[in-house]
Length: 224
Image 1 (tube, rainbow, N blue to C red):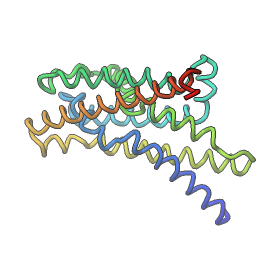
Image 2: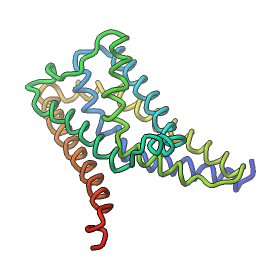
Image 3: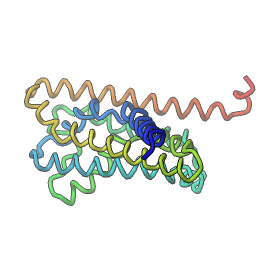
């Protein structure tokens, strides 16, 4: 591969990864993952983390390739998705905030079948890949340059970037139990409350971003 093509591939890979990693934020999501999987053994937790990583990989690529077409087909818009997704995030965060202990966290799958169901909702969407990550993926997909070679490199970079993101999710979620052991019961409870509050704030921010964009479409406000 010529140097300029390799440089384009690296740039596209880094663009996708750098744009999505802070929004997905698997580092900040690890404590929430721990709280919501309290009671699972290490094997179940790693299995769930692997499923979440795979789901996140597919969801990001799906939004990248066909996200714009899907929302147009249903007559939706990105701000509407942000408001709806933000409400879901706030709902999950509110439940986490009002649990007396990690044992009362509402999502505690035990069997492989339950793990498979919970891995997508709510663990992957909206808690890991939320409306913010989906809207960014859609935007990145719309910016892929045309032309056979440039398009192929852009697609390859997107796949590699999404793969790196999935690997980071698995690594941080699958081995997050070491954090619990280090913090102890009290530290874990404190971290749960703090993470839930931050998650609630993120949900409010997502809702506000969507509402602000929607308000801007009203003619009387647009004129100002």
